Image 1 (cartoon, one colour):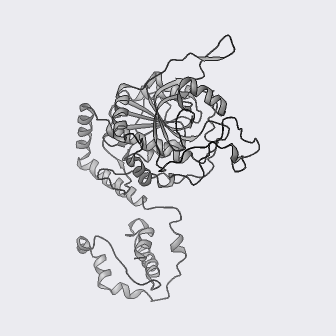
Image 2 (cartoon, rainbow, N blue to C red):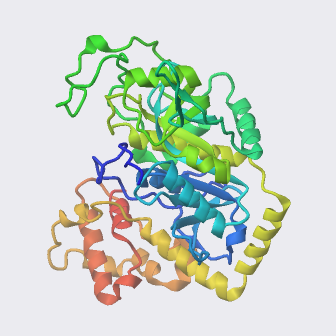
Image 3 (cartoon, rainbow, N blue to C red):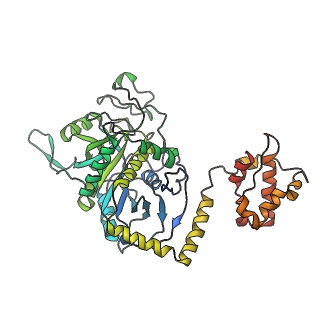
Length: 457
């Protein structure tokens, strides 16, 4: 059994926010949509595989989907669970390793995925990794794209007692290498992307760059055994680095070192990195290359030394995910993909399917209005005195709002305006309670947070 990867313990250090809902990018809008599509896709319609090792990586990855699809029955013997959806023009299947990490488990996931999804054109391995700062000007949150993968713990001990790697370098599929070259030319010499920054802010607002310092210690300086953070580490042992003009993550291309051993030693890191010209260390890509010729994309969350911590994991997972999404945007779908997708969408327009789709989409749009402590504002508003708000029931604007014939004019909105402290929130709470008494909760024409927003207008 593979060792558990130390990037995450049994429970994350901090609770993660609810997964962002699906997102529509057809107009580069920043508004989330939340719906599961009904087109009758089949397993053969999915041509992009996207694999993560950790739940936090999958969380960031799911936020890249423009829409999620319903689950499908898989082939017998496939023990994976999948997230199905669309990114740009591609139908994507996402999978996550089953709690145990390393190249052996990655290979099992890859084998199962191929069993169910026979038309996969390209596979991405997306997540976090440890950086090798001796080979490049790496900072936490930067992205390393593995144009080659070397298994660094496969080899032999030679006469002088030195370990010699014997594994051959593995390269991603030609389609992915071509797409990487295309995207690399778009990013230019600065190796950064305004598109990535935009996606981070719109898709993953809770995964932005941490406020914690980005500290790189000398390779020979070990982290104190009894310290849980680096707050008490000797600042004199920090490596002096140049100051970047921008905090935008940079993208690096080169060798990723992969193996079942966790790299947690600065000296060993630099030694192996020098021999292999490695920019990053991780634990899964070597297990994927034989089956799927994947492209590993790693956000740097630590420096592969004893000073590892979790503070940058969410951000690193996010930067890797947004790069992967941007990469898929430059890959053109095949003619067969386009024709099959068109046929599915035509099928989806049939009356029965379209009706179900619209109902499901409406339900998820309503659910997307939910947020933590949504009732906090409502519970602090005092109940109105008797008859204080009843004048509203006779107001022409309120009567028009109730009249179905007036919906084309008011679009279902009842808008209250007034000075601070005039009683807008009190009236909204009273009106909402009144409507809940008159109708079943599912028929109440206003949600709590919408009412609160209107009451502040």
